[in-house]
Image (cartoon, one colour):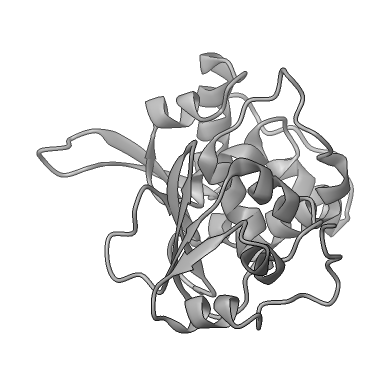
Length: 219
């Protein structure tokens, strides 16, 4: 394992970047916010990262106390990586970074990869309240744990338990929400998001109580 590189500056921002400033580290955190992931799953959902770099970053994250590696019990018996409590504390950091980068999204480029669950963090930023939300896109399904203080922020596939709201929408609408161009309640009113469910979140979306004053309406 290579020694940790450091900016050697007595500054909290510099110390933080010593741990997460390397290329790919924060995107690995984004993936692990969904809960435990196998190495092969991480590699599949981080297109462009080499196997050597991914393995090196994961080892660094273990060394720095951001992630742990453990073996699943039978019949799985595979090794998975998951965030430590310290690692999960990076969720608001990623959310702030995503908010700051909304204006950089623009239109999707031909070379841009996309995964359905990459829309999870923008949707978490856009939704108020607490509850489990299933999201159905053409590219796949994922679920959000809105307002959850502990555990995974989101997960791949349908929710394992009760669901407060189910959203069906296309990737163009998700992209508009991610860019900050469209509030979820406005998309519901425009017929771009179909909402089902009897939970508080579903009712708030149908009744237009999920508007964000700081988000312009998509024309």
